[in-house]
Image (cartoon, rainbow, N blue to C red):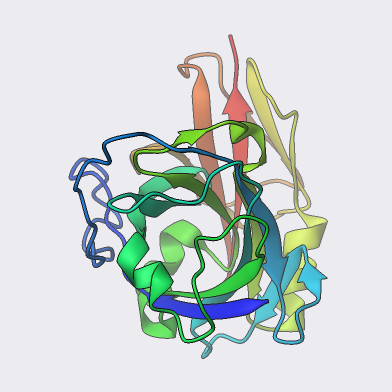
Length: 256
């Protein structure tokens, strides 16, 4: 597998006030329109550790920066055309944060050889967030969150968009924090009229919409706390549980 490093910060919509200062777009994109759109199938192979073993979760210390190794494969039939760009759309806890990526010139200049060839798998190391950035916004993202990355091309036609996305669960901090994340249960999911939070007695529970607005707040929860969801619009919500220095976030979909 080939290796290529991309370090960038991301941005979110101005209405998403909680984290808007965290993410700043940083990636030069070539926008020259290709004369003939290519047909490609970029497959997201998922996430890998430093030994190239595939992983479904990542545990890091509170002082560690967050970098992810993601596998990419173009199944063809065409290679990426000159003037096109390979895009990465990153979301955390279901909220899209923006795009970053590579132009064909950047991919072709990789020391290992061209990364636009058909059938050549490679791994990109993505430096996403510093420890200080995650600390600054721990009230929103918590120490237990999901990162999803969707891969596509800017101009080319993706013949199979169903294999573009992969998600990984990230746990930050001590074993105690990770245990707390595993014990807390938010259900049903999807929810209609009520959201239940189990095993969070005495914790503060807050519910946010996708734009970061607080919808509900409970200062000291019961062991099986009930939250009224009958007045919520359909969509995804973030449930944040704070117990001392431990912060856990869960996402729940509300359907009507």
